Image (cartoon, rainbow, N blue to C red; front, top):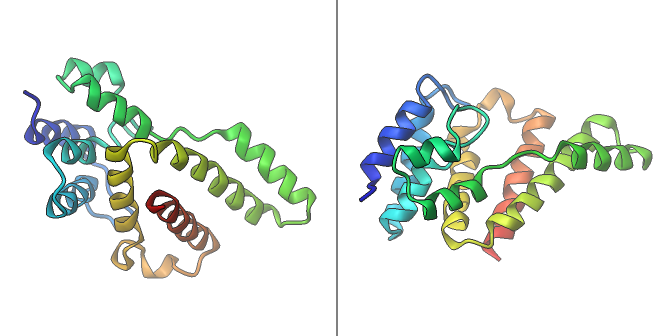
Length: 174
């Protein structure tokens, strides 16, 4: 049987050497999300998904196949695949070009297009209750004031990221 400790071992290896936006080991973010879900009464499967949430992302060499070889059950792999965000660059480019044609400054148009694309991804995540719970908790943690470096809070990029995450949480909680 695949356990939380199995997921922790995989995530620890997959994210070895990675840090979050404030310089802490990235695995600590995943542990905190899983712990918050546990405190809210989430079952072990949800905690496992939280621990492995970013394992199939761009920053690791882990694929669905590799995780399967490591014993991750198919049901969890399917949820992880749903949670793995692959940017739709064509959508972003098209949307930002349309916004710029409406006189929106290029930088703002790009951020707005990324937000729209992210919200489209969130609409898919919303369809699975485990993925939804994990994503809400992960986004809430990323919005925590301790998780946003003070020197970045006034940057346009950070303001758009905060707004994007807030809108995503609103969408997921509906």
